[in-house]
Length: 354
Ligand code: DP6
Image (tube, rainbow, N blue to C red; front, side, top):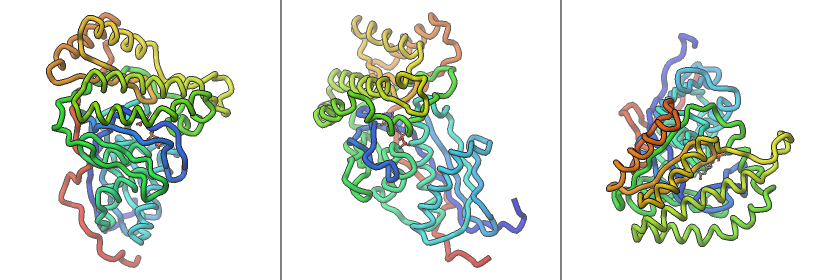
């Protein structure tokens, strides 16, 4: 980097990834990330992305570091496109340095793009001197990665699908403290998935089950909203579990033109399936636990506070019996929405001429 670079404004923001109980799968508009359906989620307090953005004079291009290294070209462009959105909103042209770290793995079904783009949106908007309200920040984050809009508000969150850019954003349904719900996430020691969520969304309509999923999604959203309000764990858990499998049924029957050797997208690994079956066995014996999955092999277990120790014990015993010693367990409760995590942020004065 040139020694002429001088810092104009900087901000650091943090965000949790979020876990959908009703999933976003399929889009109406892939440019604006307008989803085919509304979705409901909670932020995972046990995992964090922290991102610093500095707009600086003298930089000829955006500099991006993710987890200590420059990202691959596709991820780099995605970050730069997002910075362009912020520059357009703030009417500035300065290039930026972006340094982002997450304390959990990416591209394994742990919704890393949700925390990444929520933190990037808040840090970049603040560093650029924008004062966005929660709705505006959620709209901005959505354009980076759809699910990121749900990491902006606190607690239990609904992303209202909307009709256009301004009507598609996430808002709180209930505060996190409303229900002592826990998520136990099991991350395997496996490689990254070969089909991204973005590709999965694009090909979802090729599945014969996609329209059936969308026909039922309104009643599923309603069931989850009521189960949350009534703290009805059995209904919430079973609805979320079946909903996750509906996404996977669509994925497994979707056609990816560029990968003609694949009959469908299989995000599950044998270990994923082993744990899913174990959860059903545990339930039969009376343990109150359900699973949900995103587009990857990671398994997220849902339980209430009083059952956490029993569920963690069952998972540890299962991992031991399967010799899955490299697997990680991350425990979460409903986390807060994206927040500024230092005092460096602030309005940026008019961009100095270079
Ligand atoms: C399976 O938000 O990662 O996790 O908008 O292309 O970035 P892009 O997709 P992304 O999709 C998330 C899909 C999901 C379900 C969900 O989180 O609702």
